[in-house]
Length: 477
Ligand SMILES: [Zn+2]
Image 1 (spheres, rainbow, N blue to C red):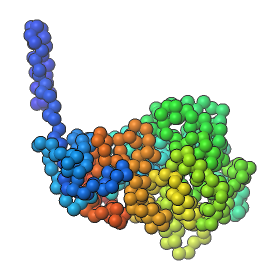
Image 2: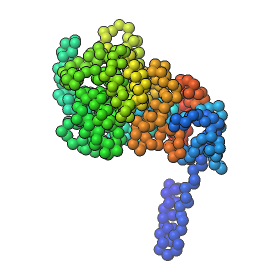
Image 3: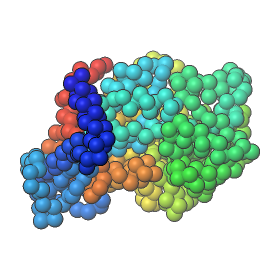
Image 4: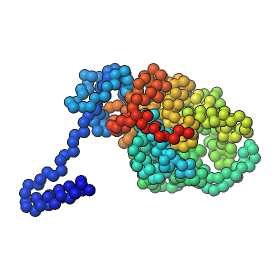
């Protein structure tokens, strides 16, 4: 009331001054210069690849980084608020480049969604990329949340057989099964895949994705190599990254790579390289993909020359890779916890995928394929059963053999590259002009990646949150 009364008076005064021909009065004071914050004394690991800087100074103003470096490189501005951080470690805000946030039918669209995002922020995650959803339904919900990572969304695209027929008979090793079209299941979750057939105009997909608020495309299933190529070209012309399942059925990862896609997800999908083109078509159309994959994906088949050739091609093209190992580990743990049950096709698939995925990821790393630490985290269900970024990074170190530094790069600099586009240039590293997305840790993550759980505070866009503050009241089930 009071401020609107003041504004109304100011308008009247301004009109009066203009009517009198007097010099235009400056009625609105300039906004105060936002004071800087200097984080002083921490060991700075900036994610650019440079060695850690001890006793560093990092200055933030507004939502951006003003400077970061050794004491001589980065002076503390006069009047800056100083945060003493001796003995602590400052790293870029972490990025999970593969999450699924929106599940209308499981309740993670309202309060649950907000709690999940708060919990991720408390883990030091300041950016996530949603890899399957309805961008138009998700993004407005997220925009209203106060404490959450930055959320970017991709648009799902799939071929006709993903949508039709609504029900079909599939011959499996266990007899004939009636299966619902995957698109129907997905739409029931609240996700909105777009259908694309090879003769369609890919520009309409790009336009619809942009309209929905998506920053790129995620190719999901039932797309042949011609479709993949046409979609990738159109999206790239519009400045949109293109990611997708490895393989995207029937197109193989080799075909996705030569089509110029930016990255593929799920290590288990590299098994597609072991099928001929005819087999890939048959498996997709009539076969039993899960059981054939379960038989074919073994720890030794991960070293097959056809897979290695595709990984070499990915390295040469700069095609990125999200293995999503922690999600598989969680599924495996769930099956292990069930003492007496008849193993499902899904269980056979998961058991095969776990060993195969680790081995494929080891080969990918040794051949120079760039890894982005997406987790396939879902925002519903018991918290302990959700894939986590720390779990994913711990597997990179313990099972794949990455150094903690290399694992951290996969969740910072390289995950920013995976996200791409304009946001990708503002996140992932502590550099002048980047968003002030930072994590202060009380233990050294370069000595032990598990120390990422020692979050003192997390800053998103210049605003500091403490884990206890974020997690108070969270429904831990
Ligand atoms: Zn996923």
